[in-house]
Amino acid sequence: MSAVVFDLAIIGAGASGLQLLYEMIQADSSREKKILLLDSGDRSQKSWCFWEDEKRACFPFLVEKSWKTMTYRTSHGETLHTTIHPLEYNYISSDRFFTYFFEEFIPANPNITLVTNWAQEIKEGAEVQTISCRDGSTFFSKRVADSRPIKSEDPALIYQHFSGKFIEFDEPILDDSAMTLMDFSLPVSTEEMSVFHYILPFSRTKALIETTVFTKLDYDKQAYERIWKQYVDKHFRSKKFKIISDEMGTIPMGVHAQKKEGSIFTIGAAGGNMKASTGYAFTRMQEDAKLRAQNRLKVTPSRFRFYDKMLLKIMNNDMAKIPQVMDRLFSRVPTHRILRFLDDKSSLREDILLLSKLDVPLFITHLLK
Image (tube, rainbow, N blue to C red; front, side, top):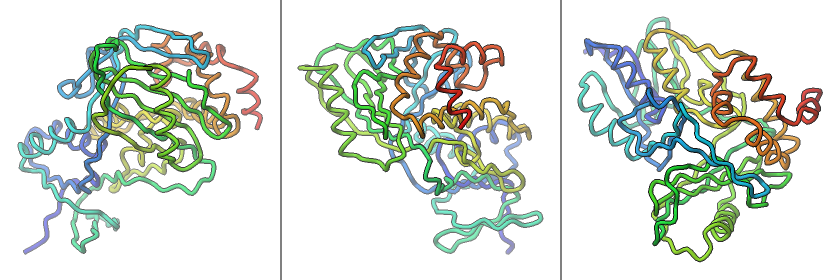
C-alpha cells in the first residue's frame, strides 16, 4: 500500500498555522485537497489582540471584547484618551480560538488529518516533500507550510517579555470602554530595559494587567512580578482583587526572519509576519493566509522595514529614551494615524508628517550610526 501524499502539510497549530488552515479550507469549496496538520500540543494561555476596521474584523465570531477608545499614559503621568474610529481594538483568547478549531472546525472537515507530533526535519524533493518527526514517523506532502520559530544568535536582538495577570476586583472600578495600549507612568525603565503596562478591561471588575518589557536580557519572572505589584499598588491602591490566572511570554523583536518560498514555505513569525518593532502579528498572519489561499504573496513597501530598523536601533543604543519617544509620538499624532503607520498602511506623505513630530536629531544620530 502506497503512502498518503498530502496536498499541503502545515507544521504548527498556533495562530499562523490555524489561520492558514482556515483560509485554505474556505478557498477549496470541493474539500478535495488533503491537508495534514502537525500539532505540537501546546495550549499555553495567550492573548491575541489586533486593531482593524470595525466592519471587517478578523474572526469576528471569536472576538470576545472590542474597544473603540484607547488610552496612553505618559512617563510624566499625563493620561491621553482618544477614539480610534473607524478602527477598533479586538481581543481573542487562545482558549476560545483553540476550542473553535479543535472542537468545531477540524472535526467538520474530514479532509483535514490532525496529528500530534513534532516535526524535526523537512527534506525537499522535486514533487514530494518528506517530513520526519520526533517519534520516527514520516509524512509526505506536495507543499509544506513551516511555522517553526527561527533561533537567532544575534547578541543585539531585542525581546519583548510579557508578565500579566487576569484579575477581578471586588468593586466595579474599571472603565471597560477604553483599553490602555501603553502606560509608562511607573518610572522603572533603565538603560537595559524599557517598561510599560498594558490593560484590557473586560468588564467593570475584570481585566488583564500586563507588564511589558523591551530588553536584550533574558526573561526575569521575579523582577517582572515585583514591577507588576508596584504598578498595581500605585494605580489601584487599597482596592481588593483576586488573581484568576497568569499569562507570560516572549516575542523576539527585529527583522531577522529568513522568509522562504516555494514547495516549502515559512509562515507566522518565521515567515516575517510579525511587526518587527511592535510584535503584533495576528492580522498580518491572516492577510498572509488569505493571499496564499489565492496563490498570491504579500508585498510590503521596504520603507516600513527601514522604520522598524530605526526604532530597534534606538532600543539597542538608547533604551531609556523609548518612553520619551512614545510620549512625543502619542501626544503629537492622532492615535488612529499611529495605528495605520504601525500597520504599514500609511502613505509616504503620512509617514513624513508623522516622523516630523518625533525627536528628529535622535533619529538622525542613529541613522548616521
